[in-house]
Length: 144
Image: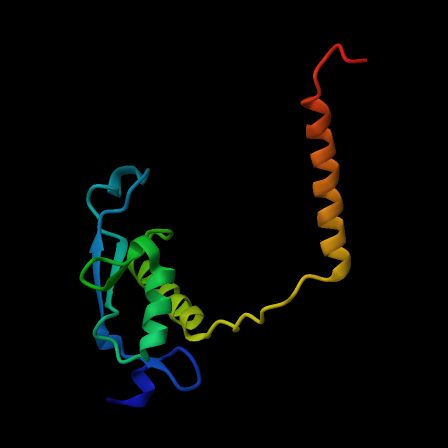
C-alpha cells in the first residue's frame, strides 16, 4: 500500500482509505425541490473489528462510538451538514479520524489519594450536626 494515500491518525497510526465504505443516501429535513431527487448525505462505514489497530485502542474507539457502533463491529457515521456529496464525504471522514485520534490517546491512570485530616474533621462535624438535628426532632413533645 502506498504510504501517501493513508490517512494519518497519529504519528505511528494511519487509516487505509480502502477500509472505509461510503454510500450516499437521501438527506433528512428541508431541502426544497431537490430533497427527494438527490442523495447528498454521506453514510460512512468502518469495520473496527477488522482494523489493524491495537486492541486497547479498538476498545476505547468502541466506547467512544457509542450508538454509532453496530453489533457487527462497524462504526456508522452519517454526515448531512452540507449540500454536496463531496463536502459530506469529507465531513464524515474527518469525524471518523477525530474519533480514532481521541481513541488513540490512552487514559491517564488514576492515582488513589487519601482524604486530608481537615476534610475528615469537616465530614464528622457535619455528621454530628445532622445527628443533633435529627435527635431534636425525635424528642417527645410536652416534656418541657
